[in-house]
Length: 139
Length: 139
Image (cartoon, rainbow over all chains, first blue to last red):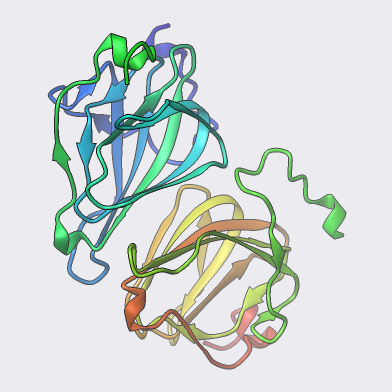
């Protein structure tokens, strides 16, 4: 499926810029909705993942909340089974929990990511999610 | 327009419970997506407003962010002109700013409300928004 297949007309937020290749496997886009500051101590971004795309394993010193708005996604905490996400699902990720998220193999996926208490730090990136991990062959 | 006219099938989140009549003029519904706690210091709710419905004037000691997802809404800061809101708009409301929000007269409106730093307090309710204020006759 090419990027041109993703119809943006019904999306709530603009697609934004390409996500950093160092921390994503596949193509994703990030639109910052609320930049980090000392008033809200929060950063909010909309993330669109092409099918098969996922971010690296990572942690949030501040925790993070995902609000799923379109498509079908994957979420995995280290050592646990992959969870399938749908529109309307809400994921609360506690501080320092090792995890990754992204699209499922055959569907685009969009979520809003809300990081609060950002004075504690927003994200620490770890290793890429291998194909064996993404397809659930190893946890 | 009756409540039955609001098609929920395309909505991202469930409609939730009726908003408290003391703080809303008209009919609205609130679905708490993330309850307040001491890990995220945040509360996130999805709010659906019937046409013409608005909340009271109020302030947020912690500030609040609105992510507009459906319909056409109104937002007003005390002493300023009403701003019309559409899907994709993001409103950042600084701490202690007197304001209100709701649907426009002829459209349903849905937003996600994100309160951060909730250890400072979430909301202080003030007077109802009169029809004269809602229709922009007085600020």
